[in-house]
Image 1 (tube, helix red, strand yellow):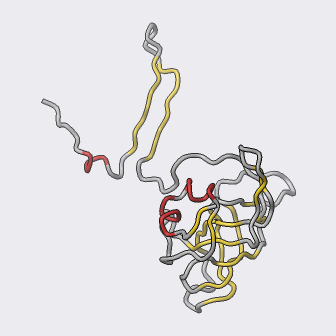
Image 2 (cartoon, rainbow, N blue to C red; image 1 turned 135 degrees about the vertical axis):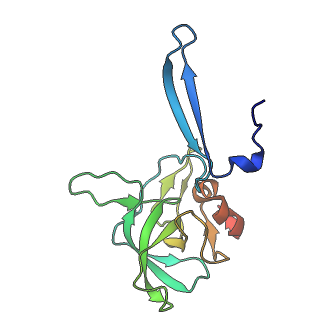
Image 3 (spheres, one colour; image 1 turned 45 degrees about the vertical axis):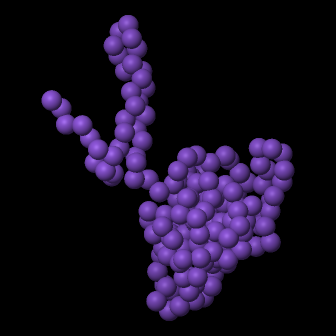
Length: 170
């Protein structure tokens, strides 16, 4: 008898879905899903409002005041185009003002608000009063325990840990 995996045995593994042709028994396509990924789902394309070099407020209680965007994760390159981030994107950032133990280190952060208007699928245009982000670890878990101000729905849908500690989701 084969061993039946329990749900606890599946933690930290990946699932592979293979679409097979029933006649030729050949694999048509394969999808690999990682159960350990921090971000859940995919994001609708939105207007990018924070290019590399932007300074945004830190919206959590980690001790940082503002964050300087150094790089954007998952952005391809184009000659002479600055990589830019939108709400829900993970960026590599440094703390310019804040606790001395947080400064002069490169750390991941998630953009939770942007000033640049973007269009949602229902046709509404939305923008916030400021640009803001929260400091996270590489898995997407927050360094702080609370978020000040609202969080974009696009970010909350993608990062459940941020959505749980957000006061309001807009």
